[in-house]
Image (cartoon, one colour):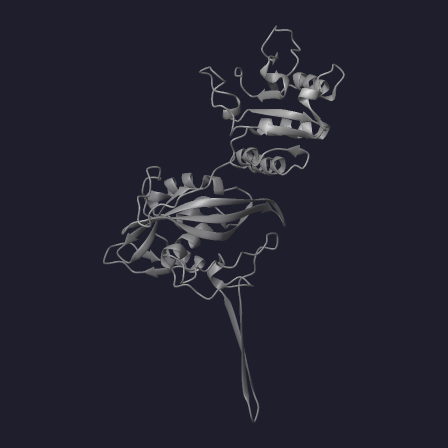
Length: 377
């Protein structure tokens, strides 16, 4: 159970170095901010827009990334009445991508609604873009010249070049607050795709840092983008393995996968095993001793490169140790697999000629397999 910090507490030692972010007037109109003029010679300051009534259906003007609208009017006059009809249309959304989400409006009953509204608008801005967007230019509209590089590095996990992205704020929670600085942890769903189809959807917690300027709260930095994967493919693979009904595993193992703590090479082998037979997992990383027991060597598990399997099909490994068993067949298959560098099991297939296959008293009740490294448990 997490314990909330004091309402006005320290922001913690791991924040990205402070970079004051100043949004341009165009970007503020685009994302629903209010721009206040600074003193002579100073930059524009940014405040959170006053909360609006909750938008529940169509995309509001404040959520679109275009900077203009088209308005047409027609007037009909008769001897008794005059009727004026006005229609306002937003610029068309790209035909190959879904429309933008409606703007999340923070309730006035929330803690620090002004602070939260600015943070959720920034989270939305960072996670909403088109496949054709120039991300350097897009981030430049959020950051000052001095801050573009830092913002680009911090937001790298959110950027998937050549794909569109749609952000949807789930909830903003205060992470810390002093008289001059604030942290807002914004739970944000990011859906990424190409053409008309989404490739994956991931829910992240973004740590948005704000600083109090002369005219109100301003975007300071993105302290955390909520974790990273090397590619869209790796993230899609993680989601696929974590929800694979053929693989029984504890939630701690699923959390390891979704947190990016498990090697994609191991995830691919796990999927190949599931293609052969359903199986049960005891542990990936979390829950395993950090070091190989009673040694100073780090375990493959805590490096995200090993899995322990206690059940093959509907048989426990401990009960399925005959030479013609399904468990023995799987161990042989793993031993022959080019990406598996180590197999611990009830059998030593190479008869101690190498450490690639081994057995001992500990490995009678499970199969241990490791990938990607040359030594380990």
